[in-house]
Image (tube, rainbow, N blue to C red):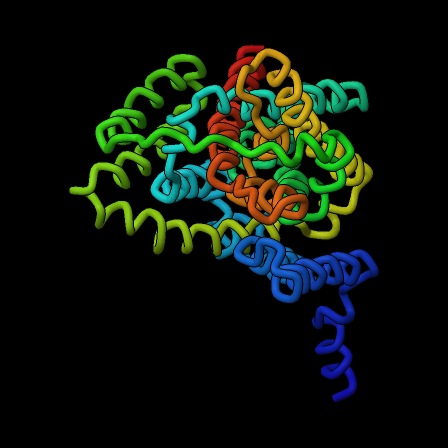
Length: 377
């Protein structure tokens, strides 16, 4: 009887766990707390946090339970991460949710979305300097775009072993946009600049909205063909939204499809952070580089907006530059929040969506360029 009891105890997670499992479980609980109590990207942090709990329950190898064991349920679900299926479907939903009107009304604001992508390439060079391989450095650099699906997509192609830390870092910084960005925005702008009010944009016709996803897709994917899986789905989703006659398909893309995929993506990304694979020196470096990348991307957008104002007759509020990172729509909301803290009658949200959505396109193009160069090398 005692032998049976001892055998039972030795088969429990309590017996097999070490401090690393408990540390990661604590991290998962923090993610869940931030999502529920602080409302920091709850649709992402809650499933990711719970996935971290799932991935760090100790199990015997060979029973088909762990996410890295071929044939296990979690491993089958993880297929959508490794192949880029989940990110592509999320881009379909984002396209069906996105209104490109403000960007079309004032195309010059697209430059702010492009400027913010500087963070990607600076982080790429920094990662190389820290000893990461070119493929790993490219995957780490994309964190600067503040685009979780794009980061996962590129990492799955170039450095599958880093999917866990890169995905968690990317989504962590996306969730912390309201914490990270405001101090940088206030540091790099004056109160006079923050008080600038934007002109009302011109009204965009329905025809323009329907033609844009077709032209946008062709231009972007001819420029960076490797971005086709992401941008193809993004512009398809937007076409379904604007075409009106496909409203049922658009509704499916922006509700049940994106919601279901978000659950699976969050769960499997979280579960991929098994303590024995996640708690490494490289993971720490990735988190540090990710934070620096995000800060550089925010600063790049702000500084470029200030440079643009030197040449523009009608000035733009440089706070819009911070929305160039592609954390949609959180960066745009932060711009609105910081602007209204100075003047409650200053409404910047609609204008901030222009660099915000162009940042999504820019990060996908950046990922495509990096993928092409790394694969070609």
